[in-house]
Length: 458
Image 1 (tube, rainbow, N blue to C red):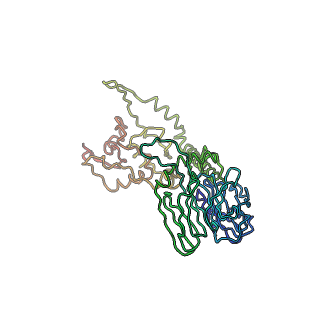
Image 2 (cartoon, rainbow, N blue to C red):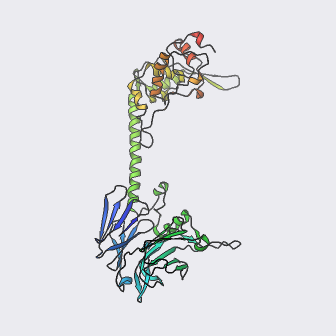
Image 3 (tube, helix red, strand yellow):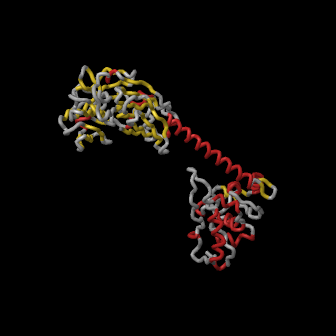
């Protein structure tokens, strides 16, 4: 008979002629979260409160029931305004105000006159109603916006009390639009259709309204801000929700969820899932760091930390004529190791040419995890980057054979994160004699297997 989405879109509620309300998990259809039983008649209307803390239903058993989403149990059952109701209507579409203060029912009676009953959230009191329709009210629909009075040009900007807008449809074929700050309706349109009004829907901007009837037609009404007022911003709307509920979960961002007072069970589950994912990512990163350290922790029987300390002791520091410090680079390529990992290169500074030399001569399986199988921060595999072989940095006269390029480009592609970009490195000043010609040839590119002196003259 009716369906309604929850404010956070995680649930969908449906009511039926079997006297029940079913709450569906919209994330995992067709999973059912709860079946609300308690009505003894056809359930013909549903509405959620603005933050998903309650859901209300109205049925032919002359009752309106409010259910808690925390445990899906009955919060209250209201019957007094409907005791005098005779007969029934095809639908009973009730509505909750966007500020959360009021719940308005369909098909109530007051002194034998048809009304739309106003129920206050504070204490579920029933002291007010919308009157004036000649026949039973079938549908009530609140505007999604909260309004404040429009300031006229030249008038002082006095703070106005926010209010809501509500449309009421009836079997008498007429439509009335009310503002909660006025005692009388804003507008009443008589005989809008040939038969009873069946449903009402506001546009998202709050300025248009669609009304459908049993006669098979749909009417569209257009309002202006001069007629309704200025809509509040989402921040102002959130502050109103906070004063009513504590914290607004309907329009809350992920950053705000960590400090929110969680009243909604679905939001609480969502926050727990986010925290669990963060813990899983941290533990996975810790395991990867530990495994990398264990693989590359020892080189030739000496720990990498000891190697680093010894190299720092041996480095030669001089000063130039203008007073700047200059550290003479050291050749550490003679270290024979079977395992190369990012931990090793992070411990010892390397130039691009020397890193390429080492990678070309030690392309071991330990380099593979540095490629596309490494998870990114979102937990998905990230495609491998292009090889960081800076071909554009070679002199124009360089000649490279295809075999040597193939031999050196593969290790670079295996571990693009290891190579240092040439633009950030100062070329090394001192080398072991075995690497002098090779470093001159590459100058930031992966090492070549053979280079003739005439091909590298600058």
